[in-house]
Image (cartoon, rainbow, N blue to C red; front, side, top):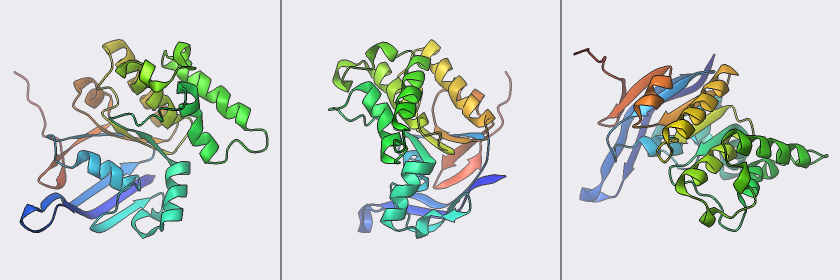
Length: 233
């Protein structure tokens, strides 16, 4: 079953002679239960692609279909609903809310999606604590983000992305700030998400992350291509 179908996606930044094409007709398919890794040089448009699929930014042209819904046609209210209920984001720069504790940051998406109604708030809090324990940061649950290390902030951000059981996880360098043990734990969690029928689209430079993916594609000159086969020495 296909979850994402992207066709002819275009996005430029700047204007006039300073304009630069990031995506120049990119096509992408992602099946339910699949983990797809995107490679590409810095500045090639990988994060932009995630933002477009996640409804954070608007494309200049092309179509984005997620679970049968045309994302580029949605209004702002509908996009907000889409982001809250169907997408989990793992941002490269974390974007934790500084005034909230680690646990409050993780629980927030569930509350914003109104999953805390009818007695479900305790359930959301319990799930948040479970995720913090899974990623080894339960002991900092009551601390503010500025007191955490970069690796701890990354693991809290990953727990936040998973708390709503979203059907699509968009992950921008999810293991980039983690030690090998923590990175392996995160990749195992992402793999288990796919095994449950949900999908993961991740941007990475890490060989371990690409090895965990079902497919790897390369973003180059504004288009997505299968990663060239590697030949042995």
